[in-house]
Image (cartoon, rainbow, N blue to C red; front, side):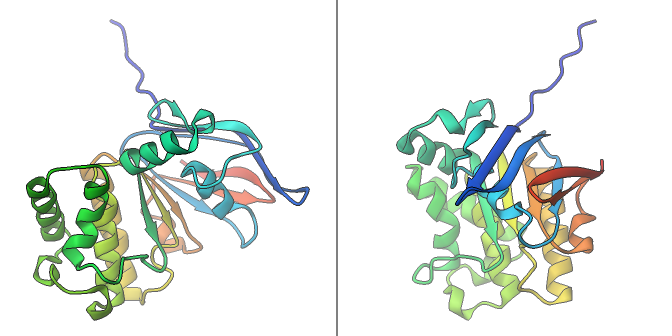
Length: 228
């Protein structure tokens, strides 16, 4: 019997990056599969955010390659990269980055609008996700009227709206109290499995790292496997 080995949904191959001749990433390699959660830990200044930016196509590595669902980000021009990011990647940030003039529902619909999804489907998907994150009752509220926990739940729904292959989360509980942090972490754990979306979670929190099957620590631009 032939056993089919699944392809990684995210692959980073020997990625290096420097700023002002200072090495920030040194030959970094990792692989992540659908539904797998990876915690990226390490001290401030170790290169975590730079790596996340390279994985998300925000920064280009000086050498090496980054593949999302088999597509090499480092070989794409700006337009192709923007399209791939809209279709394949979802982002969750520490400070939410919701659009302040749009309602909760409109914020969740926004990635779908950019992809040209029909208005009715946009509304249906947003409604399902807002129900899932227990925020439908706030669908028409503006972000300024939400609590921190509610804003992050909205951001998670937005990140999942277009069914991305990978979610990149940068300190998603760093601006929340302990109760909201625990709720957000449980939501990320549940939804990454439910949607079979790979999750890269940058965090300083041991509690956050524990929701992931694997943990890698970055030190001086080099990854060290901690567990998994």
